[in-house]
Amino acid sequence: MIFFDFNRAQLKPTEVEKLLSVKDFLKDSSVEVHGYACPVGSSYYNSGLSAKRAQTVADWLVLHGVKVTKIQGHGETDQFGRTKKDYWLNRRVELKTQRKGGE
Image (cartoon, rainbow, N blue to C red; front, side, top):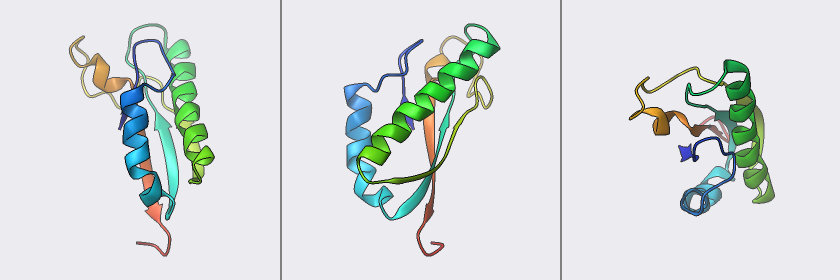
């Protein structure tokens, strides 16, 4: 998972490091990029923010030679929790992979 600061869609240096550590592995995969947001703010706003987060990660992956097959923002769905303590977990992008050759 790639995490974002509140109300932001820019990659943090720590998250870039995560992507750098897996980019070569991901080059042998088809990758879906799914963005999420915490429930602070309107559902409409969070839907757009989650899509921007997904697009940010997808753009980085494509720039580094990874095949992205799907980009989707899910807004406030799929929450880890609904307490303020859990909100940082909900500000994320998840990558789903399918290895070439069906692995």
